[in-house]
Length: 105
Image 1: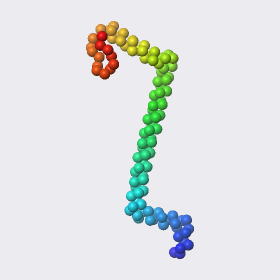
Image 2: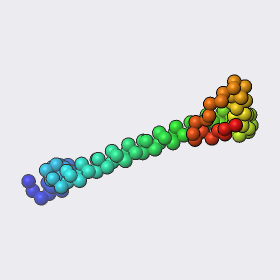
Image 3: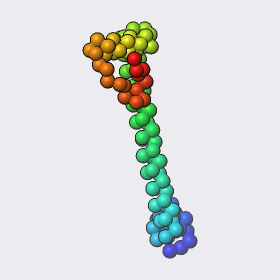
Image 4: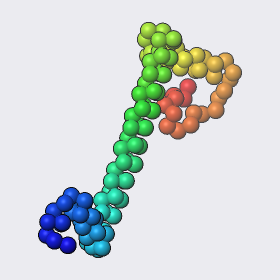
């Protein structure tokens, strides 16, 4: 093969691919790049999934807030007040679990 043959794109690409295939350093570099690239894709996929899940939960909470009234804090206070009233009516004297934020009466 003459020097001019190596300058053709097909031959040059074939020569480079052959050199990469048989070079341990190049194979190690390619393998490392594939591993890091795959790990990056998995992390990005997890981040996107988590973001989408949080957006969905936020939309659901906003929807519930509009169905329960304009003020979601007021709706939460009402449901908390109903729970404590129900407990008092049933005569439940069991002490609250630690860390629940309930007060012992």
